[in-house]
Image (cartoon, rainbow, N blue to C red; front, side, top):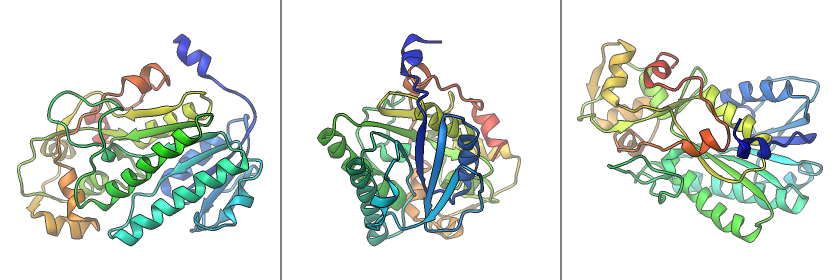
Length: 302
């Protein structure tokens, strides 16, 4: 075990609040957290009903923008924000930013000192050269509401973190997430019998939902802070990912594919933007060892 990783471990008992707790991804995360003896209480916050049950789990149906959130945050040591992807208009993106702002400011006022923020590689600008690290500039794909919402939250978090340097804010930025519960644009596309009509030569990566969950659990017991990229080792063109699923596909235009996947055309365009991540920091400092570390293995799981 690396010394930096060993020194980062924190096994102190804690109460944890998880937002977005009704999502499919959250269900597998909650089950793993409930099995951790260090986690004494889990509070799940979502506006939707959650079917997960456990003796140490409490579900709270609440809008994150509600002033009642301050009461829920009392006696919480760690907040895990499973940031939503965003809506298709400025109003929805504004609501997501307001929710994050109320969550983090209310938590700080309540005495919470550890935050784990699940973001996305979509906040980065495209890069045609070498793999990008965590300091790469923001540059969400134009017209992709999901990316724009995530970037807006991260930009605000930059100022929040600077204002409260004693807080431990750890940001996870996974590439396109795949897996049985994944709802990324790439995951939805690979389940279809459609593909983009345009050329698909740009290299992209992905990451399995279980490996993202493992990164969150490592972060939960870590004293680290800052951003950590999450992605498999290799990359492939979108066309190659389609071929690996061994399905015949009908090429269609961006607008039609966007309607089929219920997303904005800009998010379809994001699929062919060249973006390969450098995930060395997560592997060396956080101790992240993804189970699915090759594109081929990941695509078979979608």
